[in-house]
Structures are given as structure tokens and as C-alpha cells.
Image (cartoon, rainbow, N blue to C red; front, side, top):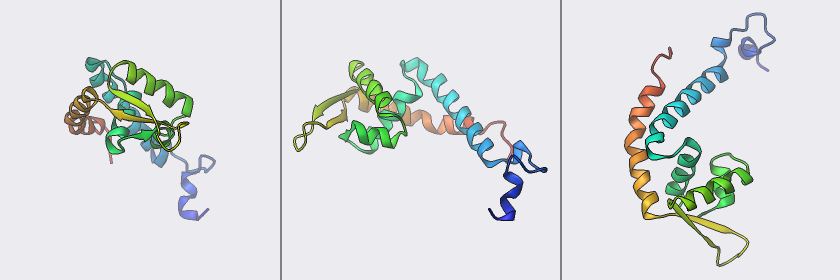
Length: 135
């Protein structure tokens, strides 16, 4: 590893957690998820379900496997979330015509309406996520 990165190694004598890039990445992510979860409670959603809805908005009719890759989640976890969202009426599924083993997923009208609400909240949440953090 180049010397310029040596100070970021936890084994370095000069290591400082607050200088560690992944510390800040995890801090920003944790704050973002906490803010998202707090806002989504009033809609009866959480961040995991929001991520699937957003992924479907970006890639309509994605397969469950594609969604799993997009949200970086285990296939079994993604499948559970998909069927929960289906039970809640936000999405629906169908078997792929070309390969019946593949389940495709799409947003329902209720899901599209939730995407609009989520998008309306995004700028506020993004701003809140950086409150209290120093550059």
C-alpha cells in the first residue's frame, strides 16, 4: 500500500479514527438511515422496503435477483421484503415469459404514489444527514 495511505491503517501509530474514511462513510450512512426510518414510520415503511421501491422505480420489472444485487442484500432477505411489499399493495409480481423460474416485480399505483412521497422527502433527509458533521 502506498505510504500516503499508511496513516489510515488501524495498526499505524498515528491512526486516528476520525481521520479514517470508512468511519465517516459509516457515520453518514447511519445518520441517513436513522433519519429515513424516522420519516418513513408515518407511512408504515422502513429503509429496507424504501430501497426496494426506489430500485423498482429506477428499474421497472426487475427480477428479484436483480433487486437483490441493486440493494446489496441477500436473495432470501430481498425475497421476504418483496413479498411483504406485495402484501402491502406497493408492488406486484409475475413469472417471466422467457424463463418461468424468474419472478419479475413492478410498482403498483400505490407504489408509485409512495415513490412520490419518498422523493419529496429526500432533499430534507439529505440535508439532515449532514447536520453536525464536520468536513
